[in-house]
Image (cartoon, rainbow, N blue to C red):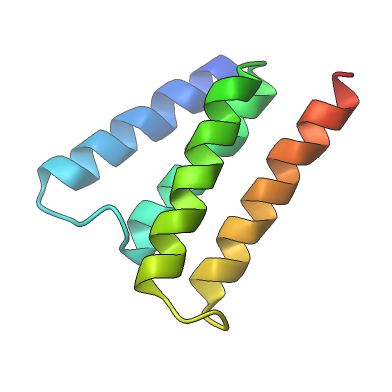
Length: 90
Protein backbone atom coordinates (compact mmCIF):
# COMPACT_ATOMS: atom_id res chain seq x y z
CA UNK A 1 0.00 0.00 0.00
CA UNK A 2 1.30 3.41 -0.92
CA UNK A 3 1.73 6.15 1.64
CA UNK A 4 -0.33 9.32 1.17
CA UNK A 5 2.78 11.17 -0.01
CA UNK A 6 3.48 8.47 -2.58
CA UNK A 7 -0.15 8.63 -3.75
CA UNK A 8 0.17 12.41 -4.18
CA UNK A 9 3.38 11.95 -6.17
CA UNK A 10 1.94 9.21 -8.38
CA UNK A 11 -1.32 11.07 -9.07
CA UNK A 12 0.56 14.29 -9.82
CA UNK A 13 2.86 12.56 -12.29
CA UNK A 14 0.00 10.73 -13.98
CA UNK A 15 -2.03 13.94 -14.27
CA UNK A 16 0.91 15.91 -15.65
CA UNK A 17 1.62 13.19 -18.21
CA UNK A 18 -2.02 13.15 -19.25
CA UNK A 19 -2.22 16.92 -19.61
CA UNK A 20 1.09 17.09 -21.47
CA UNK A 21 -0.28 14.58 -23.96
CA UNK A 22 -2.96 17.10 -24.89
CA UNK A 23 -5.87 15.88 -22.78
CA UNK A 24 -8.19 18.46 -21.27
CA UNK A 25 -8.39 18.77 -17.48
CA UNK A 26 -12.06 17.79 -17.58
CA UNK A 27 -11.96 14.48 -19.43
CA UNK A 28 -13.16 11.47 -17.45
CA UNK A 29 -9.59 10.23 -16.98
CA UNK A 30 -8.36 13.65 -15.85
CA UNK A 31 -11.25 14.00 -13.42
CA UNK A 32 -10.45 10.60 -11.93
CA UNK A 33 -6.79 11.57 -11.49
CA UNK A 34 -7.73 14.93 -10.01
CA UNK A 35 -10.06 13.17 -7.57
CA UNK A 36 -7.26 10.82 -6.54
CA UNK A 37 -4.89 13.75 -6.14
CA UNK A 38 -7.32 15.68 -3.91
CA UNK A 39 -8.03 12.62 -1.77
CA UNK A 40 -4.35 11.75 -1.45
CA UNK A 41 -3.51 15.35 -0.62
CA UNK A 42 -6.07 15.27 2.20
CA UNK A 43 -4.73 11.96 3.47
CA UNK A 44 -1.24 13.48 3.48
CA UNK A 45 -2.53 16.16 5.83
CA UNK A 46 -2.57 19.07 3.42
CA UNK A 47 -6.22 19.93 3.95
CA UNK A 48 -6.12 23.47 2.61
CA UNK A 49 -4.68 22.25 -0.67
CA UNK A 50 -7.09 19.31 -0.79
CA UNK A 51 -10.13 21.54 -0.25
CA UNK A 52 -8.92 23.93 -2.95
CA UNK A 53 -8.37 21.05 -5.41
CA UNK A 54 -11.77 19.52 -4.68
CA UNK A 55 -13.54 22.88 -4.98
CA UNK A 56 -11.90 23.73 -8.30
CA UNK A 57 -12.58 20.23 -9.58
CA UNK A 58 -16.26 20.49 -8.67
CA UNK A 59 -16.54 23.86 -10.44
CA UNK A 60 -14.83 22.46 -13.56
CA UNK A 61 -17.01 19.35 -13.57
CA UNK A 62 -20.21 21.36 -13.13
CA UNK A 63 -19.25 23.54 -16.12
CA UNK A 64 -18.54 20.55 -18.34
CA UNK A 65 -21.06 17.90 -17.32
CA UNK A 66 -24.76 17.59 -16.61
CA UNK A 67 -25.75 17.22 -12.94
CA UNK A 68 -26.69 13.55 -13.41
CA UNK A 69 -23.40 12.61 -15.09
CA UNK A 70 -21.27 10.03 -13.25
CA UNK A 71 -18.34 12.47 -13.31
CA UNK A 72 -20.27 14.84 -11.05
CA UNK A 73 -21.06 11.99 -8.66
CA UNK A 74 -17.39 11.01 -8.57
CA UNK A 75 -16.32 14.55 -7.77
CA UNK A 76 -18.96 14.86 -5.03
CA UNK A 77 -17.59 11.67 -3.46
CA UNK A 78 -14.15 13.29 -3.48
CA UNK A 79 -15.48 16.42 -1.78
CA UNK A 80 -17.10 14.21 0.86
CA UNK A 81 -13.89 12.20 1.30
CA UNK A 82 -11.85 15.36 1.86
CA UNK A 83 -14.44 16.58 4.39
CA UNK A 84 -14.29 13.20 6.17
CA UNK A 85 -10.51 13.43 6.49
CA UNK A 86 -10.83 16.95 7.89
CA UNK A 87 -13.38 15.78 10.48
CA UNK A 88 -11.11 12.91 11.52
CA UNK A 89 -8.21 15.29 12.06
CA UNK A 90 -10.18 17.68 14.31
